[in-house]
Image (tube, rainbow, N blue to C red; front, side, top):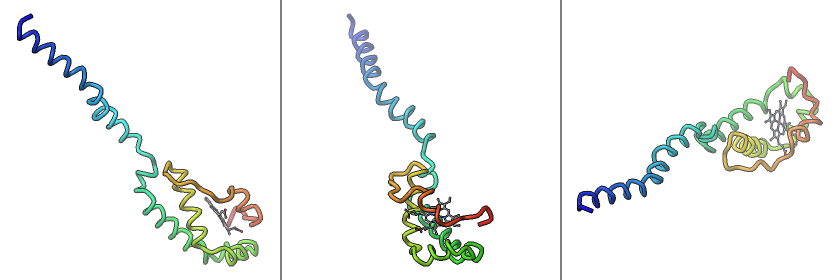
Length: 119
Ligand code: HEM
């Protein structure tokens, strides 16, 4: 075999060895970007917690909700930061984030509130 042929074989061997990492770095890398979770697209835990906090701050003083005696009693008994914590964890988990919601099921948490369609 001539030196030229040996060089060609060496080049092919390098390409063959590099191909899997090339695939991981470029092809698979771009596919993973396309599959970014909703959690990541929302910007992660910090922005989710801000939206949940604003949302609960808007709901707590809502006159329509508080006209329901069961909701009003629960609102007075359950601290808003506790609700913010649980709802943030729930949204984090449901959107594909790393959190694990540890609260009650939605049915368990709300059944006693007799929430109407309007509310
Ligand atoms: C998408 C809709 C909703 C979500 C994701 C949600 C989520 C939650 C979560 C995670 C908790 C805490 C569960 C626990 O204590 O283990 C909770 C409790 C509560 N939620 Fe909701 N909720 C929703 C709708 C509502 C609505 C429509 C109302 C009122 C009209 C409401 C009023 C309450 C109240 C008062 C509690 C405290 C109940 C208690 O501990 O006695 N929620 N909710």
